[in-house]
Length: 230
Image (cartoon, rainbow, N blue to C red; front, top):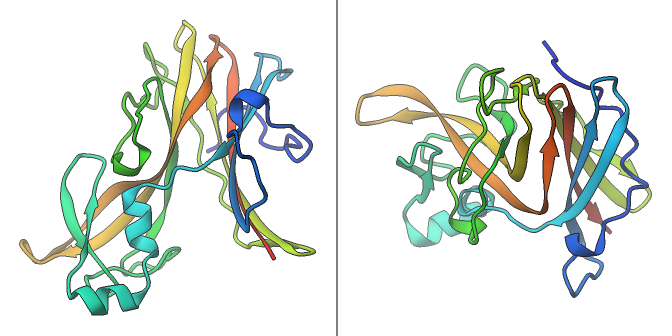
C-alpha cells in the first residue's frame, strides 16, 4: 500500500543549484541525478531540491564487473551487507543478475533509504550513517512502497529510468534528511548452512549538500534518475 504524497511531480525542468554541482560540471555518457520534492500536509510543494549523484558503492562496482574479471582473478567479490556481514559475489557464486523477480534467487530494489547522518567515503559505505526507520514513532518516517519502472525509456539519443519513493512524517516533530541510499535485496545460497538466505545490500549512497527538513504532517518524494546518452 502506498503511503504519502503523489509521485507525479514533473522533475525534468527542475534546475540543479550551484551548491549541488561539481566544479567541473560536464556532459557524461552516463549520469545519475537525485531529486527531492517536499509537500505540506495539503499536498502543496514547499521545497524542490536536485543534485548530481556520483556515489556507487563498492557493492555496486562488484556487481557490475564482467564475467571476465571473475575468470581472471579466480575468486568472488566481497559483498558487505547492511548488517556488516560479508559474502562472496560473482556469476558463479550463487547469484543471478538484477532484476530477477523469480522465486529462484530473486534480486530487487528493497528501498530508497533515508538517514540523518553523512559519510565522507561513499565507496566503502555498507549502510547509511544514521538510517531513519520506517514508522510513525519518534524520529521515524512512514516509507511507501518504492516505484520501480518495468522498462527503460528511450527518448532520442537518451535512455533513462527513474525510481522513486515517498515518505510521510507523522512523528510529531521535524525530521532532517541528510543522506540517501539505494538498498538491494539479494537471495543467495549459503554453503555453510546449505540453505537460501536473503540479505540487504547498499548499492548507491549520497550525502546531501543541503539537508532537507520535513515537518510533522509533511511528506517528501525522492527520485533517482539514471540516464545514458549516445
